[in-house]
Amino acid sequence: MRTNILPVQHAVDIDQGGRTTAPGHAVEVADLLVAYLEQIGVEYVFGVPGGAIEPLYNALARSQRRGGIRHILARHEAGAAFMADGYARETGNIGVCCSTSGPGATNLITGVAGAYDNNIPMLVITGQPALPAFGKHPLQESACTGVNVLGMFRHCTRYNSLISHPKQLEPKLIAALQRATRTPCGPVHLTVPVDVFRSPGMPAAPSYDLRQLLAPSSMIDDDAVDTLYRMIADAKKVVLLIGGWCGEAAGSILQFAALKGATFVTTPDGKGLVSPHHPLFRGVFGFGGHLSADAALRDESVDLILAIGASMGEWNSGGWSDSILNERLVHIDESEDNLARTPMARLHVRGRILSVFKRLVERLHDEEKHASYEIERRRVSREVKGKVSDPDTMLSDMDKYLSDATPIKPQRLMRELGLLFPPTTRFLADTGNSVSWATHYLHPRDRRVGERRLLGGERKRTAGRRRTSGGWLRVTMNFAPMGWAIGGAVGTAAANPDMPVVCITGDGSLLMNGQEISVAVAEQQTIVFVVLNDRALGMVKHGQRLAKAEQIGCTLPPTDFAALGRALGAQAFTIRSPEDMATLDIDAICARKGPTVLDVHVDPEEVPPMNVRMRVLANNL
Image (tube, rainbow, N blue to C red; front, side, top):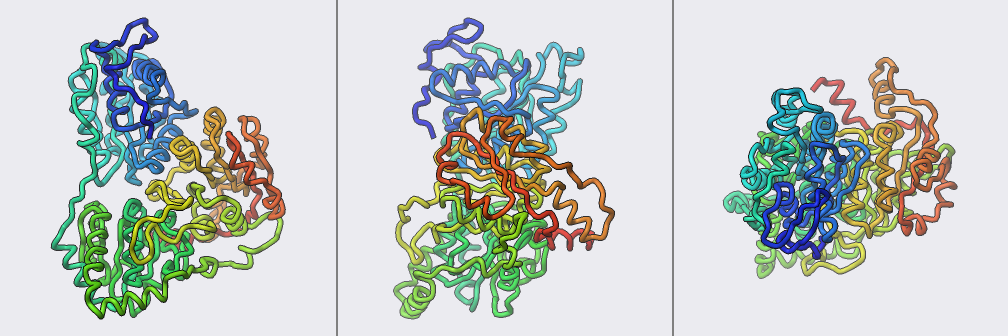
């Protein structure tokens, strides 16, 4: 986070209208809003300007001149929301996006809905025409008397309100941000008429310290943790299912697994939180997952399954598979919404996941004085310490994973991406075939085995140490909009410009949202856009074939995405074979200040691992 942001009351500036903002002088509503964002460490706001939101842009310009928040101009408002999503995942802070009224606001909705269904903390700010113009059919009216945008956002936000008076800003902003950052997290929406934005007479600095008000809670159900500990002590064999919301707790969870010798699997959105080379890792369970993971859960000798931070939707429960949803299940989560989906569980443990596993690890260490525990600890240490697993043994179609065929097999492409890029790379896999191929076959080399030493101790200090709770692989579950990863990669790179970002996307997604590559060009971001070019909406095409449905609406014309990338200002390469991948100078690509497009012509007949989705569709669940 930046540390050079000056408090508003110390900034002397002249805005575009010639008005002076000086120490002790009252400021506009828009300036106070920006001051609160500065206070909580927001570095970027992603958006597209317009008349109704102009006062906010004036305030952002004043902030930027004094070393504060920078605005990043998206090419489409949905892209701005995707960028805010990517920024939030990388930083753990709230992502902020904004738009003008009317179509600017409605364009945001897809990205906001995706964040809502994935519990991404986001502040969405939209403009409105002036209050006296409500009902008079002003340009791009989106108030209750026009196209009611507030009503639209009600269904995909945790908090949603019109600020109709300057004195409403502080209480409504605080309420909104608390809802955005409390479990279940998600986007919140404030819409502000242009005349309210311009209202003077506001305090020169925030009245409240949002950093304290938004500090994470460590609430925990002590009785449930005690019960869980006794169940673990009595269990002969424990398996963990690590979900996407275990980010901050991943180190403690891995330490617990090592202390107990408990094998673990992950959900698709949890894969990036662990090393695929961990000796206790048994693969991904759910969409695009591995048979080894399902076998680990179905093992009859397992008497306790701990599902941690998993929403239990279609993709991360294996299509609501009975291998996880049974009486052996203990569900550990902070979200009541997630817990409500597992009524069959033997136990629900509510609370902050980090706090729960810190408590469990402490209890295990307290047991060290017992001889029986010390014997078990040494056994686990011998079995685990110094070992790594080979995730390649979990894969289907190993011959295609190693194939030298042209066009390149997507399985082989994932292998090459894992081998070529440095261990600090952030991968984002887009909706469609991209996420299924990446979930199953992408296994980066040199990933750290754990956040902590396997059997205790302080964090290791290495170049591969996780900087973020977002993990090395990010995917979007549930609502799953196409093109999410393209904007998400821009937000990720803005948040952490020192690490390379690889966006794995499809040709269909790029044709929807590829204009955001232009943002990466303007911002000189090190992003590699890997386009799976199979001249089709691949998941639709293969889904229709597998379901023996009509083949319709899935074919795309041949497109030169390398030429498109160069037209937008990126460098670009066309890839047709493994040999073409081998000729890439990855070090130079990762050192370049600007994006690279890889137009990868993959074998269009390769069927992605999507059996979970097909089973759900066939059963009409």
